[in-house]
Image 1: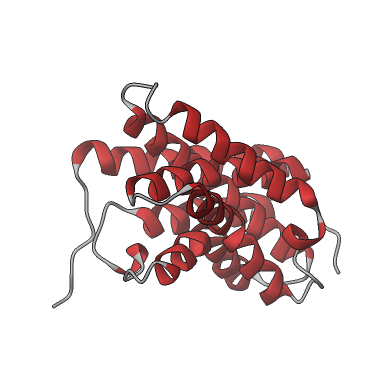
Image 2: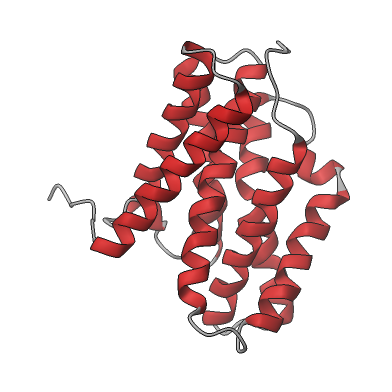
Length: 206
């Protein structure tokens, strides 16, 4: 493993918590029971990290070795269950949380990939997969066509641009990792929220 720079593990744990909130809302809207909510929140929150660690051949995925990941996911599920009927305008909050999750997981996945010696394109690929992988696994498990493959409001696009920004700043321009990460997350959130606000959508090629 090549140790170039690092982001603290709390970046990964924060993304886990935020994505679990998104997964919790999805499960509640689908009418699942408590077990279903807990399982979907866990899958959404750690799915991208599982795929990342499998691709990097980094040993057993960290989410399976460190119980903090499950604790964060299920803690978020409890918060989501409590707040679901009590917080007005919850959809807007979830949109922001979702955008932050994409940014956090994307930059952490790219950083970890580069620390394992991947090149720029490989790091971008793994970073994007880290950001959107949990949602893909969720859709497969509930037998939906993965949302990221359908025309929509710049979900994968935001991840691709944000991760590319992080890799460019941190590796090519040698910007401090934390500054590069914060900037890239800001870019991701801005693109995602503007797309939702103004209805920007990708187009089908058919």
